[in-house]
Image (cartoon, rainbow, N blue to C red; front, side, top):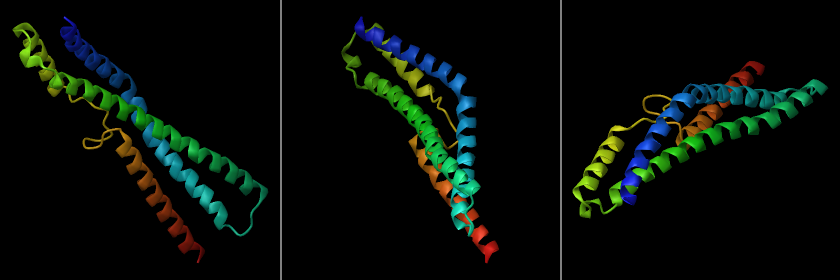
Length: 164
């Protein structure tokens, strides 16, 4: 009886996960996109202030604002990616638990229920994707930070060339 509850719980977890993704997918994708560009902009402003010869009161204020904003925005992206990475890992661990159980030694009714749950888990590949190949997880966070660094570096190099 307990094992059948486990299979039914697995199906309800998949259903709740789908509902959760349908609610947060548009919001989170937009959030990662906007925060990435915000980090790029603030990093560029922050570093550009140090490249100026005359540092004014306005520049100091800009340095403080952007200096405190960059870690905050980075933390927001990190937490979003961490949350969905953890959700995906936990969802997959339930599926692994189904596969790891000794379901072949159970009665036929339970075996059919587990096979149905396994088929459902195999067919259920719904993930929060940024693109077709990129899933929102910690890997996309690291990739986003590398891209932000590259873009800021390129913008600063262009600014240096104009100053020379």
